[in-house]
Amino acid sequence: MKIIVQNTSGVPIYEQIKTQIKAAIFSDELKENDALPSIRQLAKDLRISVITTTRAYNDLEQEGFINSIQGKGCFVRKKDNKMIREQALREIESGLNTAVSAAKNAQIPKNDLYEVLSAVIKEENYE
Image (cartoon, rainbow, N blue to C red; front, side, top):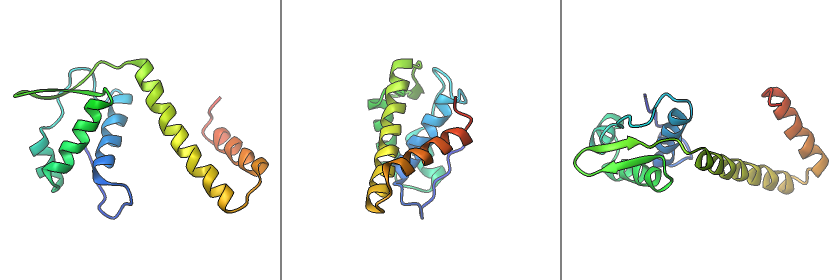
């Protein structure tokens, strides 16, 4: 698994790390009991602060994606479909809140917003 961070992105680096690790878990690139790079090694590889990688790993552990075992490292937890669904719903809700706020600020009617959502769903072949 390769993690790429962009310093110029508006997204905090720890969030970029979390998002990429979650994506690797969801796609089965990372499987149950796979070891993650050590906090220090990841910080060194990405040329970022250990505090940043610690924050990402702590958040992932709190969200139930990884386990930290003192002296051994961090490992991917068994996928919990309920947890995955909840996480996905939170991300969807966040994205939709952003879209609705943007539409509201631009005074775009609800029907137009529904059409945009419908078009996106169609483009993604989401049935």
